[in-house]
Each structure stands twice: as structure tokens, then as C-alpha cells.
Image 1: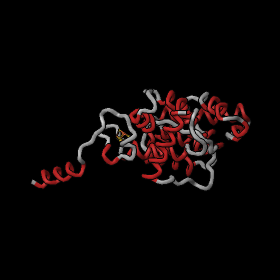
Image 2: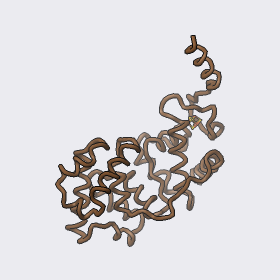
Image 3: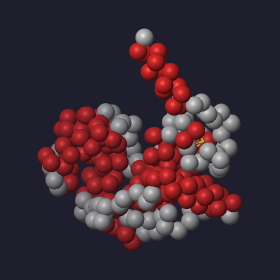
Image 4: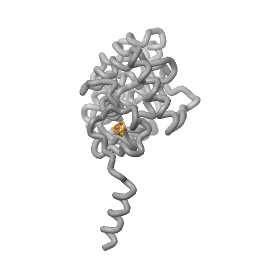
Length: 236
Ligand code: SF4
């Protein structure tokens, strides 16, 4: 109950700062999200998007990607980094679906509940809880909040979890997640983590969570004054 209230409080403060994040009206295909999220692991959005678009424009149908060798997929997606692991994971997902499900599609997930879906997806090589929960949130539109490094760092600093392990944090925060807020909570927390609560030198002075946050090493330097003095020094 306390955690649920804290999540609501954080969500409301983030909504005041950032508003409701936009959501596409068309619901993406779960397999597109799964493969896109595999490509996004340990790289930036720009490079993972480039790799995904290159794969999709070269082979719009996943059935054709499945016919490629792992090496051929690796060549196409190498801009996303970790090409060998990611191409191997993609090839194995597609081949599994073809051989065991008879169809290269994740539509069968629609018949399962959230925890069954997570269990199904994490059986795939290279698919952890974060990737699986992205499929839940973005393609199946369930109330599931993926926990990446930004979400884990900010929640630990704020003090509502005490867990170095994002997978453990995922379990802790998703059980009491209030209805219908996972998308805005997840998206706004990532934005906070990228723009304000950065790994080094969080800009606590402008943070909407400043009063609520329990982080002991808050960075409360006057950023305006610092910027001004940096400008003055650099002009000499
Ligand atoms: S107050 Fe500082 S440490 Fe706490 S969430 Fe905001 S930026 Fe992060």
C-alpha cells in the first residue's frame, strides 16, 4: 500500500513536469517490439533504430528474415553492436516460432496472462525480463513497467526500492503498480533519468522529485551560477 502510494505520488509529480507521454494509436506487432528491443540492448536509440529499419526495409516479412543465416542477419544489424549475440537471438526466436508454433508470430501470447507471457518470452536466448516486459507494455498494452538502468537508478535514488538488480526491482514495483499508469510512469521516469537524474551529477535542483527523493548525495549546486562562471572562464 505504501509503495503503491509512492508510485502514484512520483507519477503525479512527473506528470506535472512532463505531461502524459504520447502513445501511437496503432498498436505495434509483438514480434516487431521483441526484435526491436533485442536490437536496443546495450546501445543507444539511434543505432538500434538504424539496425531495425535496415532489417525491416531489407526484409519486411519476418518469414524471410528466418530464412537468412545468423551471419547474414549479423551483417545487417551490426550497427546496433553485439551483432553476433543479437543476430543469434533473433534467428533463434524466429526459428523457434516456425518449428514449434508453425507460424512466425507471437499472436498466441494474447491467450496468456501477463506472468505466463513473461515466462514464455524469457525462455528465448537473449530475452530477459526487461525485453519481455517491453512486449507487454508496448505491444500488448498491459499495465507493466519495464525496468531499465534509468528506471532502476532513479527508483533507488528516490528511495522506494533498494535493489541493484533491475529484474528484482521489476518484481517489486509491478506488483503494486496502480491501474493504467505503467506507460506514463515508465516513459517519464526514463526521461527524468536521461535529462535530470543522470548517472553522474544529477541536476537535483531542477528535479520535480526533489522534496520527495531520499537520495543522500543530492547535487544542489547552483547550475545557473556554475554555467555563468564556466562561460566567464572560457571567455578568458
Ligand atoms: S532529487 Fe536528485 S537524486 Fe533525487 S530523483 Fe531528482 S535528480 Fe535524482
